[in-house]
Length: 625
Image (cartoon, rainbow, N blue to C red; front, side, top):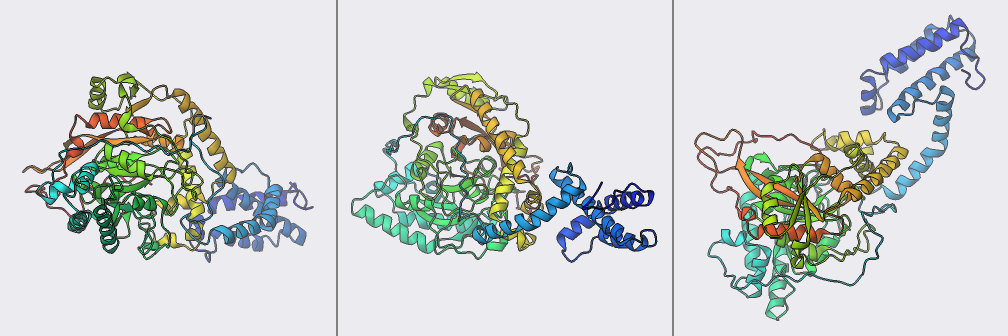
C-alpha cells in the first residue's frame, strides 16, 4: 500500500513495522484510553506513547528518514481507520482516510464552526428552527382555514360544593359553570389551588415555581370582565399549570435542569398566549424532568399521588402528578417519546397526545423538532377537548404547526365507527363502547420495519444535540442530574453520521406508509405505554388519549392495609388529524364509568403508609422524554 510516494511495505522489515504498529494500536487503543481521552483533552493516550516508543526503538532498524515518515503515516492511517469503525465506515483504506482527514480539516471544520456561530449560541432550540419540516398528513386534501370551534355541552343545576376538596376535583366544565353563574370567583379558585399546591408539593415535588402575583392579576381581570358581562368561555378564570419548558415572561423557565435553574426567558410562549386569551389563570410552573427527560429534576424527583413510594415517570411529571392530586384543574405537558403517556398512566389522569403539529411550540424548549408535541392533562376527556380547542391552531412562528379543522368531538356519532382492539387492550373499554353501539373488531398494526425504536432514538438524539450543542461543548452535561440519561445519549449522538440520520428518516417514511395501509379502522384501543407503540406513534405522529380504567393492589402491601393503588389505563388511538374520534370515544366510555373521578389517597394513606425518604420503590428508568 503506497502513501504519497512511500515505498510499499513489501520488504520484511517494512511489513514487520506496519503490522506491529497496527497490532499495538488495536490492542492498546481498545482499552480505557479512548474514553479517558474523551473526558480529558490533556490526557496522552497510550497508543501515542506506544507509537513514539515504537519509532524510537525502531531507529536502529529503519535508518532512512523517508521510511520513518512512511511508518508515521501508516500508523496514523490505521488509527483513523479504527475511529471510522464507530461510524460503520471502516471500508476506506489508509490512503483514503488520510485524504478524508486532510480535507475535513481544510473544508468541513470551517463550515462547522461558521454554522455553530450562526445558530448554536443559545441552547434549547428556541431560535433558528430547521427548514426541514415533518408533516404527518395521510391525505393530499387541502385543509380549510376557517375557524370551527367546538360546541360545548350545557351543564345545568351545578351547585358549589361545601368543601375545597370537592371543588378541587370538579371538571373544567363544572368549574366554568360555577364561575359563569357567579357562584365562585376566579380569585377564590386561585386561592384554593395555590393552597393545595403549597400543601402537597413538599411530598410530591411537582412544582418548580409558583406564579402567585401573575395568578392574582389574571384572576382579578377575569372577575372584572365577568362583572361587565363578558364571558370568554369555559376556561374563563380557571387556574392551570404549565410544564416548565414553556416560557412565561417575568418567571423562571428552568427546563428542570441545574444548568438553567435561574434562566428567565423574555418570551411569551404561543400556548400560554392562547390560554391567556381564553381567560385561563396560570398558578404554577410545574416540574419537567431535567431537559425533558424522565422525572428527575434539579430539585428532586416527582412522586405518584396514587402511590407515593413510586415516582411519576416521564418528563411531564409535574403536570401529571399535580392534576392527579387536585392541585390544578388541568395542566399542559409535552411529549417527544412518552412524556405524556407514561406519567398520565402512572398517575391515573386523562391526557391527550395530539396529532403532531396541532399545537404551536413557540417559546417551548425543543428536544426534536420533528417529534415534539404539547398536550393537556385533565380530569376527563371532555376537559381535554375543551383545552385542545383553545390551544390548537397555526402558530406563525412554528413551521411545523398547522390549522387542523377537526370535527366537533361532542357531535361525533360513535355508532358509525369501527374500533379495533389489540391483544393488550383493556376489555372493559371495548365492552362499554360495544354496548353503546360501536362496532368493535380484533386489530393489529402490521409493518415490516423492525428498527422502530432505533429510528426514534436516532431522530431524537441528533435533533436534541443540535439544540444543545453548546451545552455539550462547554461540558455543562457534566452537571446533569442523571448521568445515564441525556449525557450518555448525546455523546453517542455525536458520532451518528448525517447520512445515517437521513437514512433513518427514509426508514421512518417507509414506516408511515406501512402503518397508513394497516390502519383499517377508525380508531383502536391498546396499551398506552408499550414502548414499541410509543415509539411508533411518535414517529408517525398520530394522536392517543390515555384513559384511566381502574386500579389494582400495589405489590407487597403492608399487612395492616393501605389505600395506595396501582392505576390501570388504556390508550385510544386515532389516525392523524382525527383527534376528535379518540376524544369522542373516550368521552363515551367516561360517560358511564367513574374511574377518572377517583381521588388519590394523599391525605389518608393508612397506618403503615408513612412515606419513606428516599422512596423504597424505584421503577426502572427508561427513555421517557
